[in-house]
Length: 250
Image (tube, rainbow, N blue to C red; front, side, top):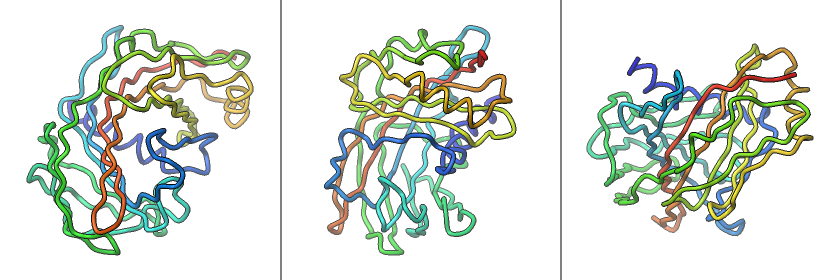
C-alpha cells in the first residue's frame, strides 16, 4: 500500500501532462504574466481518502521539469535534461518523455523529507548550475473533509477554500474511464473563499467522456517561491495534496 501511495502523485502528474485533454489550466497567481520561468521544482506532501478517513502519504514526494520556452504555459514540452539533480543529497531520476515531451525528474527512494529542501542542480541544456535552499513549510487545508463525494452534469461544482501557508489553490477533477488522461484544473489565489467550476464547464467535461462512472478530486494548497539563478527565473513550489474518489451523477 505504501508503494501505491508513493506512486500516486507521480502517476497523476504524468496524466496531467496530457494538456490536450485539459479544459482549463491557470497560472499560479504569484507568477505574473511578465515573468518568464524556465523551471518548476516541487516538493509535496498529501493525504488520500479511503473508507471515510484521510491517510497521509508515507513520504514527501518531489518532481521538477525545465523548459526554455517557459513553464507557464508549456508550448513545446518539458524537454530539458539539466544534468544531475540532488534534493537533500538524494539523487533524482531523470525520465525522458516520448517525442521530446514531458521529460522530468522524480524521486525513487521514498526517503526524502522536507523542509528544508536543498536543491542542487548540475546544469545543462541552457539551465545554469545552482544550489537553492527552500525552508517553506507545507501549507495546510483546514476543511478538506468538505471535499464533495459526487459531481453532477447539471450543477456547478464548488469547493470552499480554507487553510494557511499557501498563496494558490488548485482544484482538479480526473476521470477514470478509458479516457483516463482527461481532467480539468483551475487555480485561484488562496485568498478566495471558493474554487468553482461552472455548470457549463462541468457539462463540457461530461461531453468529452460520457461513459465514466467515477473519478477523483484533488485540492492542492501551494506556496510558490520565485528565485533567480544565472539570470533565469525558477519556481520552487511546496504543495499539500488532498485526494478523494468521486461519483459521477448523470
